[in-house]
Every structure is written in structure tokens, then in C-alpha cells.
Image (cartoon, rainbow, N blue to C red):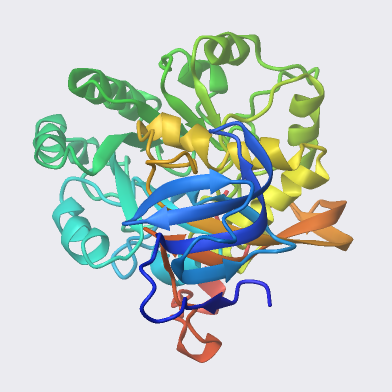
Length: 409
């Protein structure tokens, strides 16, 4: 049975804690694609070999007919459940999606980050990092966090970052008409100043303007992250004649990271097709998972990856953008790969073949023939338990009239 586990005979000294047998390994970070067995010892990958069938192990996982990848890294998530408008709980989703490392991008600001650390990061089984929101109130409400510039307290933000360098990997600023009413690009200028002063990258959210993509691009630097890069909003990175915006192309060539951040309002199939046809592929495929997006049409990261299979990207290309590529962005070379010595975060998937219809945030449809379905997630070599449907948390606690699928634009 796929994903089944067994225990070695009593009295035999284990050579590995866990062996994953017979899977099709896709590990772009190590340049490994093919049928291999994976051995895990003491929370680290110990071996990736053509056969470990004769090895002794405390646990054996039958992965025949399945894809074996490094644990996925989601570069754009919102997991500050109970405090922010957007937050979900990471652990239940991780167990059924293969995402073992989560980057929460801006849910917490300076006022709320201590609670994020204590009540979200510390109790969670999965690995959680953060980008600090320039606005001290973070994403407590759905919009307008920059309407009052008094919340852009750079000194306080710098103090919070310095005390939490182990978790805070950058600065986040949402810049569009829903977040910066009446203040233009001033929040982005302040975010730029804060990020530069701390030596950290800046993630910038774009969508419906104002401002314009040109105003935002002027404040981007190599190493920054442009999330929602395939948005269909007026700030999209296509010119009016459908060409890649030349300034974005130049910035990307110099090191600007293009991140999908699908979400509930930030992914367009027509924009994606136009950019892919011109050879501009995303550097990272992330979910922007939150209380609205998890209800569809995003659903989860494997579904988002499946949309890029439908767009013609290969499975190794897609897996790369959810493993080693985001690992490079967050500076963790021991994640996003199955190289011996790396942390033993592993995900197993089935490739279901059939006739599927995928949707973007405008409910524009595209047909696909493959769907990635997670079957098992290991964190540090230990399987994450699936939570029964009846015990899963209810994230959508907002009144129905406040949470239509396409509410946030």
C-alpha cells in the first residue's frame, strides 16, 4: 500500500531510522531525478541510493508509484490564526499538502510580533519564519494598514527585527489601492529605508493600482521579492501591448525574485501565459494561503503547482520552484533538498491523471491532465499525522457576507 509503514524485526540494530523505498525522487537542488530509495537517520537525510532494500530500518515507507520530493517551502503564507483577518493554522494543512517550511509574510507587525512568536511559531510542529510588516498593526484588518503612517514606526520595527533575527528574514509591504489609500508610495519608501538599514530583503505586494508598477519598480532592488508577479490587476508586469515590462525584466535579470503568491485575488491565467510565452518564468511558486484562498480557487500549494503543470511547465521545474528556489531566497541551504546531511523534510505525492479544470482568481478556466496530491509529509523524518475531517479547525470564522471568494482585490 502506498505510504504504508512497517517496523524491522526486533533485536536488529537499525541502520536507518526510516527508509523510503521505490519512489520516483525529484530533487532539483541535488540534480537527482529517478527511482531512488531515501534513508533517514537522526533527523537528517543519510543516503539517496538506487536500492536500500537490504538496509535495516525502524520504519519502512513504501513509495512505489509515488513522487518523493523535499518538503515543500511556501514563500508566501498567512498563519497568524485568531489575531489577523487572514490567518490559518499551518500544521493541519502541512500534513495534507507536503509544506514543511512556511514563511508568513507580514501578518505580524511590531505591535503583534511577540505574540506571533509565542503563540504561533513556538507551538507549531512545522517550521515557520516571517517577514515583518512595516505597519506596526500588521494584517489585523483586511485593508488600509498604511492609511495611518503613524503605524510605520521604523525605530520600533528595527528593534523587533534585531531581537528576532532567527525568525524575521525580511520586511513586507502591501502596496496597492486597498492598502495605501491617500498616502501613495510613501509606505514603500519607508519600507525601503527599513530594509536597507537592516540589511534585509523587501517583499512587495502588487495588485490593483494606484500606484503604478513603474512607481513600485523604482524602489525595488536585486534580492527583493515581487509577490503576486502574475497578477491580472492594473499593476501587472505586462505593458499595454502585452510585453514583459522592461524595467521588471531588467530587475529580474539583476536578481529580483518573482514570486507567484496565488491567493484569492492575485493570479491570472492570461497574464501567466503571456509571460511564460516570453520566457519569463516565476522564480518561486507560492500559495498566499489564507482564510479566503483556502476555500478556492487556490486551495493549497499542490493545487497551485498543478496549475503550472497545466501551463506547460515540467514537474521538475515546478518542484524546483517550491523547494530549492525558496530555500535559496530564505538562505537555508539545508532545506529544499534531499542531499545527504540536509534536514529530513520529505513529501510524497501521487500524480493523478485525468481531465481537470483549474481556475484563476477571475474564475477563468484552463484544462489540465495532471494533479499533484500529497499522500504523506515527514518533518525531521517523522510523519505528520493527518487530522480527521471532523477535527479540522474552521478557519472561515467570518460572516458569510464578509468573505466571498473574490473579496480582496
